[in-house]
Structure formats: C-alpha cells, structure tokens
Amino acid sequence: MGALKNLISRLDALVSQIVRKNRCKRCASWASEPAHVFGRKNLSVRWDFDNVIPLCRRCHGWAHGHEEKFKEFVRMIFGDERYDKLVLKANSVKIWTEGELLQLEQDLKCILAR
Image 1 (tube, helix red, strand yellow):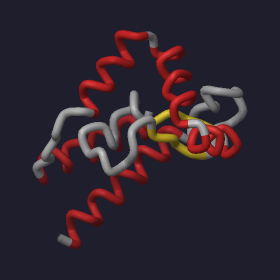
Image 2 (tube, rainbow, N blue to C red; image 1 turned 90 degrees about the vertical axis):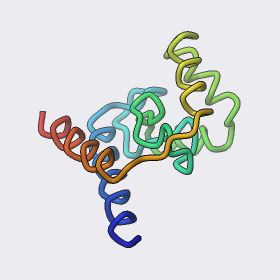
Image 3 (cartoon, helix red, strand yellow; image 1 turned 60 degrees about the vertical axis):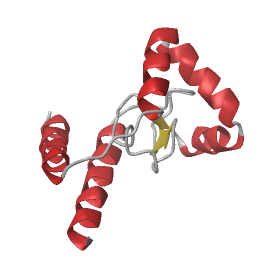
C-alpha cells in the first residue's frame, strides 16, 4: 500500500506543478495553488485538469468559503457543456489500476516538460 500512496503523492505533485504555471482564473494574479472543483477524494477527477483550477491563495480561500458560488464561477468560465461533462465524470466511479496510474504519471511528466 505504501508504494501506491507514494505514486498518488507523485501524481498530486505533478498536477500541482503544472497548474502553478498558470495565472489565477479568478483575478489573473499568479496562481500559487490548485483548487479542486470536486475534492481530491473523488478519484474519478482528482487529476483531471478540468477539475483542478489555478487560483491564487486569496481566491482559493474564497472558493472554499463559497463552494456554490465557486461552482457557478467554474460553470461560467467552462460553459454548460464542459461543466456538465465534469459533473458526470465526478459522479462516476473510477477504480484506477496501477498501470493506469503509472501511465498518467508519464503523461503528466511530458506535460510538465513542455
């Protein structure tokens, strides 16, 4: 189980590094952290870039304090179709295989290297 936890931590770190390269989607300042539309416990969208929005610390705090307004904000910037697809994906169950997670790690490393 320790190896799997380690792999999940590496995936989280890679997604965080990729997201931090972008400006805050709410105020356009440099984003300092990734904000999840649907929490990290939701493995079906945990590493999905539609679910991880770059927000600065201030806006990330706002998102946690105003979850419904944050989701309305995400719907506004995504549009209804893209947001509804994210909701469907978040409401589905995803059981990752170790092979899928390892492939995701490689894919994320390639994105980060760009």
